[in-house]
Image (tube, one colour):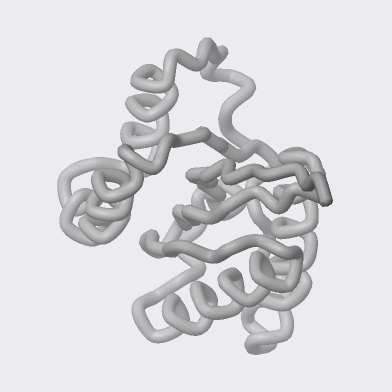
Length: 150
């Protein structure tokens, strides 16, 4: 029987609204586990998660049954609702409305995973905004600064 085959690997980056520092080292593992579950529940093959207090990197596969935009919208919406239930202090939590998503080949995967693993060290000397601008430039994404940040 014929079947459609696909393996699209995505590197998704979400920032907290106004880059607020919501995810301290105590809650970050719980938030990452929750996001991994959200991705799996949407039909994705979860690969890896990482980040710091103001943003998260998700490497996952895009399910064949949903568009990239719909997949990301569902991750944002579902995780935002779930994170708000972690603790009353998270009631005011929101993701930034703008996100980054980049496709990668399997040959790039290991380098991206290492990059994500080094987030703590990386952000000792660099802000999320600096990191994100550099990623956009490296990926050849044209952008206007005024539309990138909430």
